[in-house]
Image 1 (cartoon, rainbow, N blue to C red):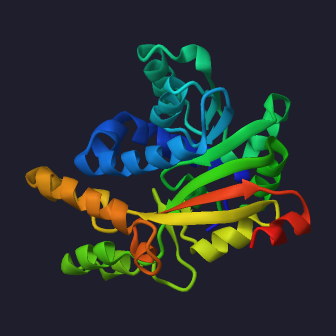
Image 2: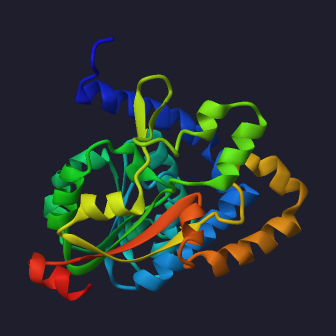
Length: 282
């Protein structure tokens, strides 16, 4: 098979996420499990960013996180590769009365350099595994280093490597390939045929990929006790239990070893300048 060019990959990704946008709410955003995941993300965003700051959002999807920050007084530049996702994000911002606080761009993550005239930003974030859809993080790291001011924060939610819930679920359904997809030595798999690569990186790999400009300060797990989103039917039948598991999730989130079994790792980086500053924070 002939290798795909960057333009082919961009078009394929755009088409995939345009289709996903039409059912995103029912598939994830408005689900019992999805809401527990988003609440965990919002707690971290609320701790990290504040009113008056200018924040860059990568892979904004339908714009729920941007609206949340805008309602708290932040100015947000929200980007996504999918024109349809951006259409829905704009509609959501208008419906919530914060359209004046959010600027939307149809923009692949690999092309963040085009935002140079809009920086610097006080911080940036990427929710729900958007960076897992970027095969080469080098250019993204360099672009973010130019866009985020020294001392600013980068919050990124990425896929966990070792997820007992996922292994047990797929193994019980006889799909051992899916059960092992995050556990392999170099876990990369494809969505929608050959079009979209999903690269699962450990916390250590993310830390190295974003160094030296970004220093990992802390991280926590999201989705330890609460199962992955494909178990939504189970969660709908037991909403009270799911809420109780979400409370347990919050308690377990920072616990070493246990946090490594989460569906997602929520990483908090600081934009640093020079080797000396990075070393001083160890």
